[in-house]
Length: 201
Figure 1 (cartoon, rainbow, N blue to C red):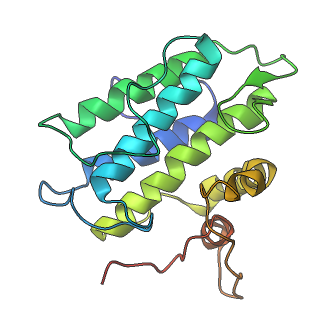
Figure 2 (tube, helix red, strand yellow):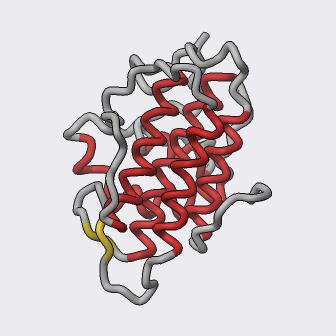
């Protein structure tokens, strides 16, 4: 964890938040307009979407207001905002919300189908959203992947719980075939409809 950041207490979620934090901090000043693996979205739009989703997960748990913009129609205009501060506010809201979850609860509310999940699965689903967009940002900017195989393994488990219904809404592309040389990270990315070797060039 970075200094001064809030821990949710859920290992997969905290690691995913750190991956997204690292990815955003690595975007160069002139990199916010670059294309990403998310078709038709720039780096700035992916950031906005990821921020909105983290706020959405927090709001589902706390009943507080969700994002004040549509995460699925991000403008790409950061309007002079500090991207790191923009992200940190959302990550803090999500981490605080998940830190307050009863680990023995049968289910907790989530903003994604089936809209209620076990506490572990819900926290991991929140992490999946952060982690995959962290990868999108690093792929777009030519940075090393922030998604190690040891994090990809539990993320694939929760992805297999939630992704199929979301494909119908266009949230994820069709899964890509796995190749013999794929590691756990590549297998996760292909399941999410992403080419592990994607580049803007």
